[in-house]
Image (tube, rainbow, N blue to C red):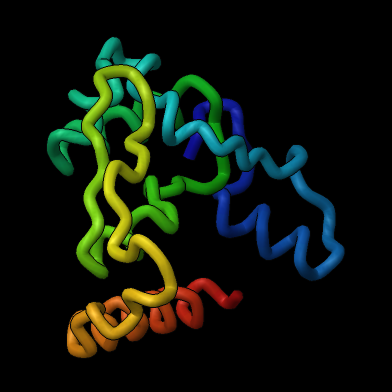
Length: 131
């Protein structure tokens, strides 16, 4: 809990969802991509280990008091899961470097087992988050 808060993030979210009063407005800045700046790490260094990711999220929380911690994710990993690659920039978020398909004519080149795994992870995580 942030030092100035009177409610935990879960209590605040519950109050919001049920129309009760809150100690302050919900704060959900999507700062995960920039959280390395808070602890003096480049984006590459931040994403180089789970420990660095956690340290940066904790430091961002201490500074901003956000109500949600967001794990950096994106649809890039669907492409990687299907055989594409990303680049590894020092100060930016990764971008897709090679695509698993050059055109829809290549659809038969996808590995069906890999496709099942990627889709099952995506579906499970979507239901878990309530989307």
